Amino acid sequence: MRHIAIEPMSAAAFAPFGDLIDTSKAAEKLINQGHCERFHDRAQMEFAGGRAGLSLFQAKPRELPYQLDLVERHPEGSQAFIPMSEHGFLVIVAPDQDGKPGQPRAFETEAGQAINFHRGTWHGVLTPLHAPGLFAVVDRIGPGENLEEHLFGTPYLVVRA
Ligand SMILES: NC(=O)N[C@@H](O)C(=O)O
Ligand code: NI
Image (cartoon, rainbow, N blue to C red; front, top):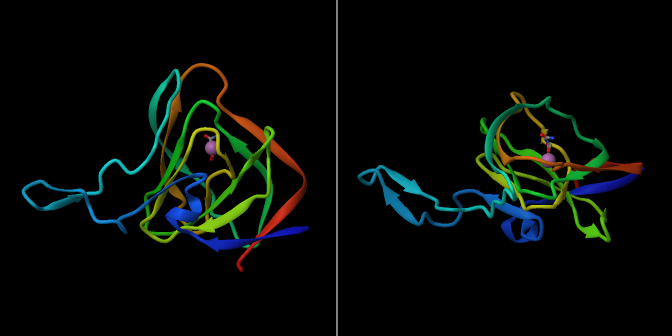
């Protein structure tokens, strides 16, 4: 089985696929009488022909090595995964190659980080590595199909480098 080594997550490495959302860059605003830093407007979200939806996902934590059988994409909108617990999680993406996913890449976030897949980005489904696996998800609610799946002929195995 082909291996994918987990890469260190960074905004630059993830930029072709989406936004890494965290507090590493200084807050733009100090609000609430100085009691709160606002890390303002940190994701490029799209909800073509629909609206933004906020859902909770209760996902089963996975073990590493992780067998990757499938990636998917949302042609009409972005999708943000926001952990509701202080844990990192596994993020898998792939470039598009003529309508099919190219070589997948794997990242592991740090506690306190969220991600937003840009519209149409090939990605693995929500993959927690720690319980409770509870996430807020912001994505498109609207008419028409917004899910395209690709099953790999041969699965990949995601491993720590
Ligand atoms: N299908 C769904 O609601 N979730 C997936 O899009 C996912 O990326 O986990
Ligand atoms: Ni998705």
